[in-house]
Length: 225
Image (cartoon, rainbow, N blue to C red; front, side, top):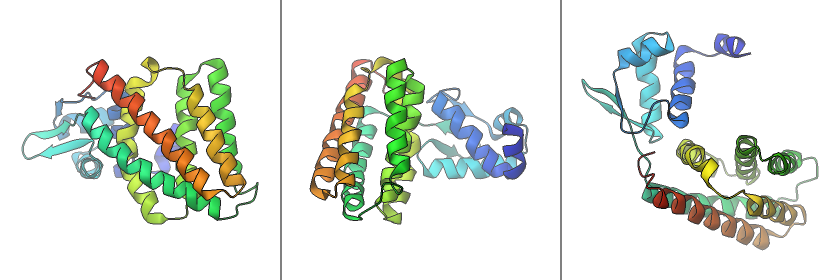
């Protein structure tokens, strides 16, 4: 499947995908420096698409381009995450409110419902990686249902940094049972057309998530993700 995907992607798109994954997974660790030629050899392509991909990832705050020195993988501190979550909290809560106002049908909300079912199953089996994927799907779909393309673009810009922090803290955080309960409450409020409740429950959920994530970063001194 990956070979098939590679055939449909340009070298720049493939470089963006692969470099992003290497950064999020920690294979390219925060604070490390890498020459474009080194990264090109690792990815099996020329330097041009690697440079183009690096410029795109620089705009997302994952790395820094440095003249004649290649790229540096940027850290994400607890303070960075506080600022990011402040923005996500307000924008996603507004999206939840707008989704509840939209009068969506059961079919319209099928992806949101499926993501919650996937999270519940993941909790039952304690498969935290599966839970993280389903959680990400829930938030992406919630923002899409909010119907504001600018909110979608801003949230997407920050998604890689959130993904990095979550990947590092996933196995040292409490089992996210409460998070699943919050998702169900937001979903129910949207289904029943209660915009204020959808907004407030999602805002509370994001504030709690910020407290847990930043608390872990600070407790374990993970300030250079």
